[in-house]
Length: 138
Image (cartoon, rainbow, N blue to C red; front, side, top):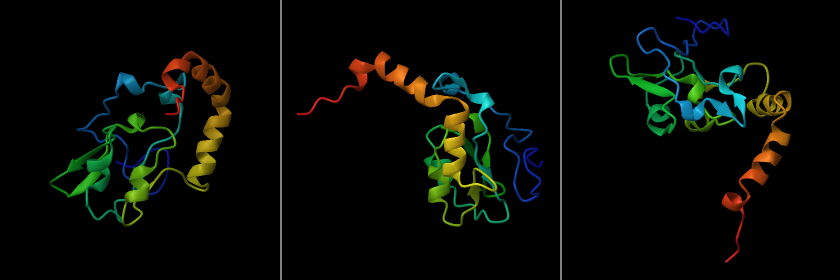
């Protein structure tokens, strides 16, 4: 099944029919913004993927599952992905994972920050979490 957000037949869909996305309520919001409204999720180019499984084994947010029969990782929980994280893409030895088309991932991440007015939200969070986040030199 192709991803409806792009027309590249080599990119697999983020939600496989037998592995429907299972969101984690802990990841439903990103700085107060509904995560479902933010376009940030990995896509795997099946023709490039060598099936090493590094992305599935490394991602702490369970974005991936590994298809042992076909020896390929699959994106099954795309909205669990931390906005602007691209650890999996950075680790992929063959560059089979992408987050954007036509712009760099940094440009895309910065646009998300701007469009969702994240900086004022973070300033408020810093005040709210002051004791928790306060740096105390030794």
